[in-house]
Image (cartoon, rainbow, N blue to C red; front, side):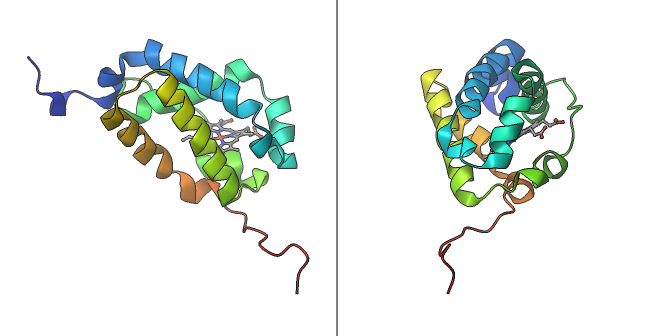
Length: 138
Ligand code: HEM
């Protein structure tokens, strides 16, 4: 039997078919999330990009980041999100959607934590907008 510590996260998740299934649900969830689409830049992009292409790129990225044989062929996280002006409230909504998807597919807690760590490692490149705590100014 293989030592679980030597089995990649990709393999523990069940490989590309399972990763793609989870990404499919997650992207469907975020593309209609009103907490994210309240940001007009995100709303515009969510209605412009093809869901199938978006799912393809995110699947590639997750497979690659979890130790699968795929390589990510999309743009960097900075280049694909800078123009969206994402703030930390939107990030939290995105992570909430992510947890809902992981729970729906009964991804075990240890694997969920590893996935969250991978996603959190991209936060600095993605969340660039300050929160407007006092929009009235003063
Ligand atoms: C609040 C958080 C996020 C929001 C609202 C968001 C939304 C979007 C949108 C709307 C696009 C299309 C941009 C365009 O083409 O103009 C995009 C691209 C993309 N996002 Fe995100 N995203 C978020 C976080 C993340 C995270 C955490 C990851 C992965 C760890 C990710 C992976 C990707 C990928 C792979 C692309 C495609 C890049 C390309 O076109 O080459 N996103 N995102």
